[in-house]
Image (cartoon, rainbow, N blue to C red; front, side):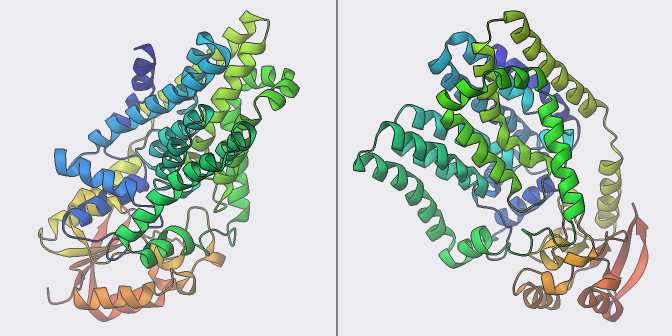
Length: 459
């Protein structure tokens, strides 16, 4: 179908490099650890729910773990599914033409950000089909389905659960029967509770709900975060300027008739803001409700030429970002590959390594087991993109992580330590446990791709 072709075309850049951002590297490394007997939230940890690591693990089990192309195919299908659910809602409300427009807006806006945010097979991409399905079900009074889909979204990424807000509004507006309320809430709570029991309630609650207090902070990064918030919001809104102008002309009508969609958009905006980091891929959560509102605005306008121009503008914006993805520098990929090749050359397949940095894809590319369950320096220092030294340090680590880390490296000393900090606030000189570990047991043997490599003495 044409919509599927458009979804494939705008995601062509995703197939042209081994990875787009460190989240893919983290997920790929997690999946390998799980495949080799690791247990999620025990010796394989992340601040995210379990469904996407399991999806990576399943894809690797079926098709091998040397490439992310199966996940990229699934990401295109996820984009298409999101567009189809969004189109179905628009078609039910405003007719077939509006459904086509909503589907196109969904696909086109899904790439209207920096390519590393939109071409990667990461959390937001796989969260969106479930959020759109939840809204689709609620729009049709299928309350159990809406709850289940909202739970699936939240178990890909926690903020996916905000789609419960418009579902609850529609429930209050259209169907206040106690049984309907019970079906919606049970549809959400039962799957989440089942996953918590499956992975261990205590560990699940810590990693998915309560263990990110210091991470969800502007400490040391407020200027960067606010600049990123404004920049990414501006980019996405710029991609739909003519449609938003038409929406503004019909704003009063839209607020009255599309209150559920506006509530979905507002809840999604809260989801973007949670954590105060405002990374570009967070903004993908805005795409389905924004696409619906734009489709409604184009339906209500009495000037078809303006409507066609609005859609064409967004198509051109998407084409620009696709072109940026096709021509983007491969230097970051080349650098990390160079480091991984050095690790591979200096270790054997059974040896563990420690990458002290924010690029866990080095483990995956080198095909070496991590020496610790903590795959980035961020979990041990609270570092995140743009955060200065103020919010970073041993005292800001995930609770109990340093005790666990030191036990792990004592029991299984890594054959190599790769210092990939490159002057960041978590450099070994600023982190005493790492500094002392290197001084006591390791010797510097060289550099690669800007990283400093240390070998275990007497190896």
